[in-house]
Length: 306
Figure 1 (cartoon, one colour):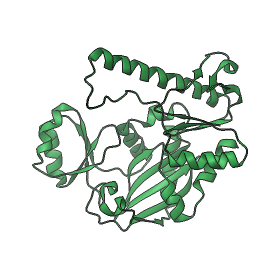
Figure 2 (cartoon, rainbow, N blue to C red; figure 1 turned 180 degrees about the horizontal axis):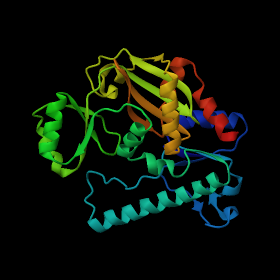
Figure 3 (cartoon, helix red, strand yellow; figure 1 turned 90 degrees about the vertical axis):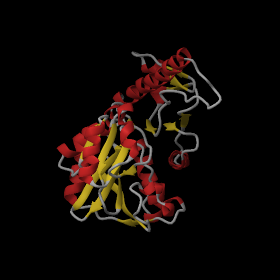
């Protein structure tokens, strides 16, 4: 079994432990480190990862791919040619790993998530469009690099949320007159109407809900629960959430549309019902698993070896 991700990823640690207890040989590669690989576009038997034949690979669990660009240290002053070289190297790793994963996927082995899902799901904007198409409520949204358009949107919302178009940075509150609006021409930013209500996280595998919980014990002052002091201090509590069948069906349709066999979905439980925020292909579920007593790790491991 091939596991891909960070060396210190607790989710991979847990899945690896379950697989090894079941007698499954595990090859684990880190997204930041180089490893030995051989790719043949025709003959799978010639493909190898860490000197193991890909033909023997029973499946793969992908938490992170090699980064697209090595980040320079603060003390470094890389030239444009050096940055271009780093980008070419990173792209070569990413493309070759994807090609190897496609071999595994097309051989009928389980890949979480299969090649193609990450390419579709990475752009958050496309996910929002697809979620709306499947009948999920999404916040009023504007992506813009225009100061007048952004200013008007924030004024109309009274309280808006600013998010990066791509990446995992924290969402922040934006009010009318915010000085950051003047920086919009530097790059497009996602602006959304602020939705009030508890945060709900759903983890799904093959279209079925493995666990769903509502985060309690937070102050509610932060637009992103990860910035709440109670969450940082570990005082947030996951309580079971019974998501209605209609919403589950829409989330299952969205995950199938994206090609995500495993995903985490962030919702807001507003007074008018659930509002869709985001779909994540590498969901963090360990806290939910412990709090709810649901064996998410075991379900993932079982799916990989089925």
